[in-house]
Length: 307
Image (tube, rainbow, N blue to C red):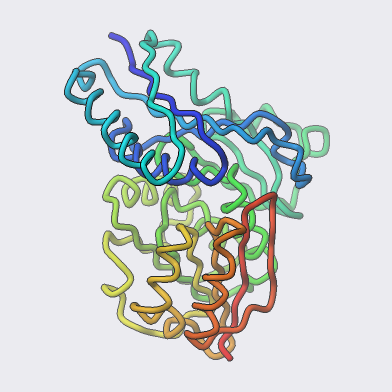
């Protein structure tokens, strides 16, 4: 049996759109975004401009019709943004198993959050020597399950904001939960009640599995659905890590600010720098006030409070 690797090379802005377009075709919803350089360095020049987006499919799913469909999807995207056609490569079972895992390793975000890939034994990491500290909040994740590994700047900025904001007993709404990395972090930072929603059933299952692996399943409820399926209530923290056009729609049409408590905070991420103005306008029109701005290279995130 072989695995089909589908790869597309684009840039930071195009990578998010390509990842979302390819994700429905990927095995277990897994998408790899590979960008050469030092991911931990906030310097804009620390990473190369090119980003390679990769998905993997088992042999039984590899058909001429599927390859043609992938080419068509990317062709239509290329009418709006310069995206090359995909390239295809057949990998043996062992090569595939290690292909995407090679890009993920334990690492720190902020002061207390430690990302631990699920296939690497914690016992092999020595506190202090390998960067782990005894008071770290450890998130054990399988990046192959769904989008949201903690490596992407959009996710990192959300984690930095959560580390600052979450206090014991808080309630959190996670819109577009993905792999549940943000909800798990909030729970381990002390949040007592969390709800995560996602339109993708595979992401929902990945979130449930990851919450269980991390021992916080009793505090995180996960549902398949959109924001309008959530009964409006005032949350201490609402976090949305999606894409700028979706965020604007949630603010303008779905009353996103109405879910934020009087003293609560809204965290917005997934915003390319050139889209920031449109998001800021939508926040103000919805009755929000930006109180903190994060930026990693050309990605932006905001912490918002009600006016």
